[in-house]
Length: 146
Length: 83
Image (cartoon, rainbow over all chains, first blue to last red; front, side, top):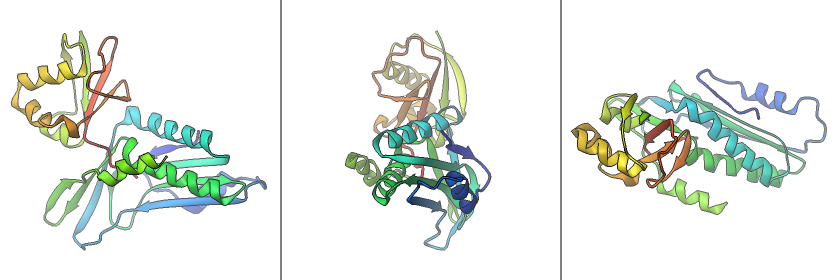
């Protein structure tokens, strides 16, 4: 289990290289990186709160489920917390497999479960004030796909 | 029994503190919520709609009827918004 929760930024290229290491049996490496977006032009920062005692356990549980369901050679989740500005990286998942189908599906699965089963909460700080981001019903419905 | 309770996000803001230890005889999460709600308005404000409050017992998600026997930590928080 290599999942991490951290305040500091991460380097996607470095993480993917470390995940591959010297292995030559990986045929497909899928990466998703989530970024702080500012679509209206008024976002000052996104604050991510988490439940330290539970977060890593939740990430490891999600990762174990992915490893059990798909034939993965490697799997990684990194999720940040703290105050992040527009354009900054929030989190990444990476999955490695012999073939692309397993890698894509597992990455999609990881993202769906991270959205609503990992104990993180986002608060948006805009020019007009601050408010918690509401969970989307669609995110909860997305879990039923799996 | 003594129980550690932790709160996150807007549940924490409404209650006004991140963590506390309470003395309670509640047998289930539902009874604990009722007990706290009766205690002070700030709890009532946080627990007004339990459809949008999630609960974890010793860091595992549970429902409102989960028993509190041998539990160390109960957490209350809004639906999660990770990713």
